[in-house]
Image (cartoon, rainbow, N blue to C red; front, top):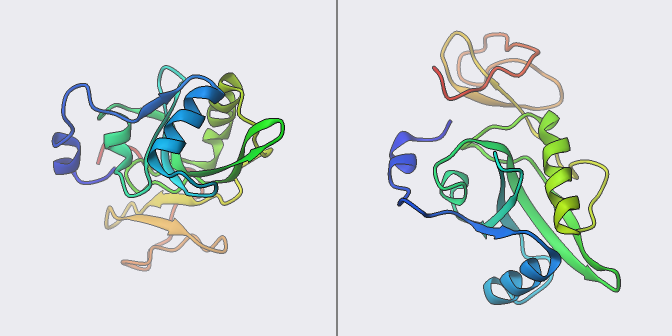
Length: 162
């Protein structure tokens, strides 16, 4: 959903660090942040694997320019039982994922052996205005376009097709 120039700028073979297991997470987070709680950009690729990049990275770059099953921001804490998700959202204006992507995100975390909450700790609702074409974040269940004041659809309608 983000700017096409960002997608075109993704170099072939680029993408976030694939996290297949807790050891991958530990190694990568120590190299990138060195502290608990630092948030990261994440995507879950069509291969159902978790990928991480530094927080200010574009989600489309983290995904290597590919489509995803889920995307957002994530932070971790280390516990005596291993890594655990501290906070997680679907906040990605590049992909505008619906909160219904949670099962794919949960599966990727489970597969990697990373503890997680039962759902997003902060979920955003995205809708595209059918009148002006702008993407919106729905706040407080008010489905009205902030750009043109039109009603927004109740069902997720954000895709890369305009």
